[in-house]
Length: 583
Image 1 (tube, rainbow, N blue to C red):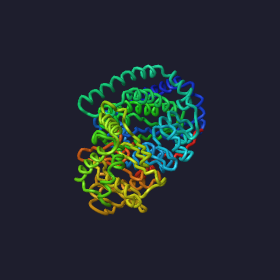
Image 2 (image 1 turned 120 degrees about the vertical axis):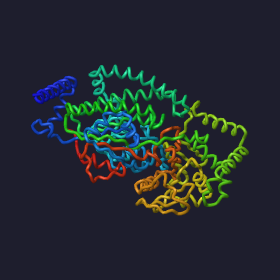
Image 3 (image 1 turned 45 degrees about the horizontal axis):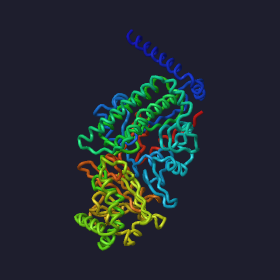
Image 4 (image 1 turned 180 degrees about the vertical axis):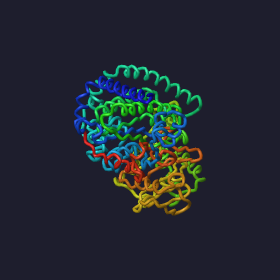
């Protein structure tokens, strides 16, 4: 008797939910009917199976497990413990950055994307992953269609071939700004959700108060934070407004039966950069994201437009970091240009070998002495003043540096968090290790950087793989991921212990637009702390710690048991197999 009553109550509840959603999304009923027409005799279950991907940008597998233990993500915990979902860790590849990862997932290629910031020698152009023009330049070199053909993408870097791509930096075909922001469809959604609009306004105010408090508390505790005055307002836009809008758009797509949906929640990445990947602000952000994921899952249970497979993943992780500028009192660009302008006479006399680590202090003192004795007084005063300002990290954060172009020295230096690329602009082609070592001045700079304590590895091209060197020794890494120590000790034990990681190094340095020198920030495994060349306290882009290990969640059996994932490129076939095109 009780079972019959429970069954009737469940049927009544489902009927009320259907009535509620049909009334709520009445203006979109025609779109839903059009997609349902693909089904046989109106049976939704006969629609081709679709997929939904929810990307939590920069959340490492280890930090997800920490959030699960501390109760920040109850919906994800329920999926794992009650619904039998599987959770796996996979390698992010190199660079461990969103542009490369999303290109790999969407299009099955990540060639010519060596970092978040990099330099194109042929075009004499610096490309930055947050700039629409730069991302469009990259998009134009990618295939026209991707895994989202016939589907929708929200808050991604690339469109993935989607018919509808909103809040997306680059598209296969140009769109007016109004269309990029969602157009009339999104405006109508807001009108249909007045309660959510009010909640967005109140949440924006609360978000600002909380972030200012978190920043103040971090500074009282003596923790460095990567903080600019306008960041709370940017975070309100991304963490409150954009998060709500993209969630609404996904809910509507589920209702209407869009076959392929990919949405990226970006703000954990921002909080992890500014406060640290395991910080309270970053984990609190995960709690809000978990609630939105819960909404999406409820919509799937209550009134789906077609059957879906759901994937929740990240593209890379983050490793706790100390900014290079904090650790050494200057930017990496300052260090490199001082060595080039004033230190070559000292360093060139060392010979074609790396100086021992204990010689580093002596070399730095020599460089400082030469620098102080050369140049015009006014220029020296200006250099000292600018360096002093850059040292005042808390007082003058707007002086942060991410690109250094030194035309007179024919050098371009780009920083991508814990990864940096150094290019010699003359000649305008990639240089290999042998060419660098054959030139006196390049060789001197190379060995100076190898000896620097803030740089863990210097990687360069070789015909048969990659040459990697640190203060303890140097080695050759083959395309198969095998390592041959050439002198000293293995320089990779803290960075690449498996063939997967070593193959990623070879892939990165062999890219034609990777730096002539590829620099990895030093990593201390005892403290799980790396050097970040940007002014950030959470870093990714290279190797060292959990930045290289994101996660993938999916229902049991959705991912074939024998499917190996050793790079985001291996995720592309999982989604391409659906072969969907919306009706």
